Structures are given as C-alpha cells and as structure tokens.
Image (cartoon, one colour):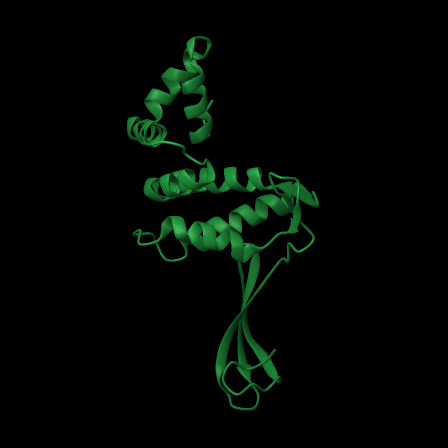
Length: 176
C-alpha cells in the first residue's frame, strides 16, 4: 500500500475493523511513520448494468454515488448516511448473485432508500429518474408523501377502485 504522505510502498497494518460490506484498515508507513486509513470493499466489477435502451455497461459506484449526492445536496443528513445507502444498495446487488442487473432496479433501490432517508432528496431523485413531465405529477407525488402511510394503506385497500393515475403514483412511491 502506498503511503499518502511520502509515497513509499512499505507499511504495516495497525488496526483492522469491519464496516458494512468492507474493511477499514489503519496503516503506518515504515519509512516516515505517518498513519493513514485505507478501505477495502467487495468489487462489484463483475456486475453489468442493462440500460433502458438495452446497452450494457460495467457497474460504476461513482456514478451511483454522484446521482445520490446530487439528490441529497445541501440536505441536513447525518455524516455517512449517503455512504450507507450506497453500501446497502451494493450489498443487495451483490447478494442477488446475478452478473447483470437493470438500471431500473438500481433506480428503484435508490428511491426506496431515499424515501426513508429524506423526502426532499427522494423528490429530487424521482423527478429525474421518473422523468416527471409536468408540475401536476410532481405535486401528486409530494402530496402522497405529505399524506403519509395512512393514505397509501387506504388506497391499497380499495385497489379495485383505483384509477390508473393512482396506480402510477403508488408505483412511484414504491407502494402497491
């Protein structure tokens, strides 16, 4: 492992701890005695994402992180919350055991987690991911979030009498 301070490659592990789906290691450079931290996590490089148009591309954690960070920008979230969301999505993808996954599955997983983490981040992400075409659709999703779980359970009880618009809203929020 290369030292962050002097660039020397000789270091020793001082401490190792399991964190989520990876390992955090404290290292000490044998040349300059500086300490630095490294993180090891499972590489999901074997997973390919199938896009809406049928293209396949290698899974990219940075791309997932970028989208979630944009949605959560300037939100008062606990330190590490975004990383936990990303780690839990990656863990779920890894545990499927599949070498390919659809971009829509990843988007749905992000929406599930953002809905529980921060409603504003959820709306921001949903507005791009679900490609809201007008303000009315956005307003309906916001109203559904504001009404909370009570209105969703009432809507699911009367599922035989739902309009296509209600079905669309419920699919946006991940409830049926």
